[in-house]
Length: 275
Image (cartoon, rainbow, N blue to C red; front, side, top):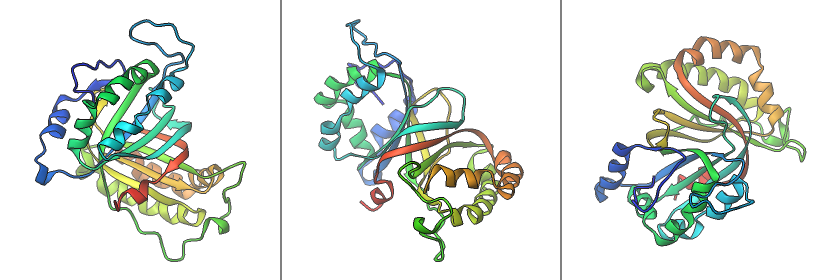
């Protein structure tokens, strides 16, 4: 969101209705919000004022990273990782996923007017080709069975060559959750029986309340699932019973999705639910 008129953006469309909700939620009804950021970088940074630069898009965005302004409004980056493989969703091709926890919706709005944020924003605008910023609240996720194996005891444990991965699903359902929840729950229950012995963990599931920057599409949920290795994920994906459940339930439920294998370099997602 960039409601500050001093800021212009070239990397997405602002949802004015959700911007109004963020800005007008009464204090007594406000609370934490998790902003899921999907980022696609320009090959080369392009500053709006035309200045010459040798920076890549990612390097420009790294200069933007507003740690000081985020701290000033009580927000923290709680997840960040680079996209290893985009499995579903053709365009944009995402490069990085990050999640920022804000203590209130008002804090997110206040960030946009922070002088240091405004000063840094030119680097984000120069580096970013496309971005989605999806406002979320945590969902209850299935509990891990008591007999779930540790990652030391699964068929494909993490190694230096194949470390743990997060699989990120951005989901829109046919008819919303009310229309497709039963089908998706049936798939999830079936897939979990296959995935848990391979070490799957829920990193965080979210209900989407709005997409402040995007391309006009709406989303229903974002799910982060953790696997001990890419090989473990592939073993689950290719399991014949899971493929049957995908055909019978998941494909019936989902109208649109991005699914990505992400290599996290910061993950405090589950911890952030208790702050």
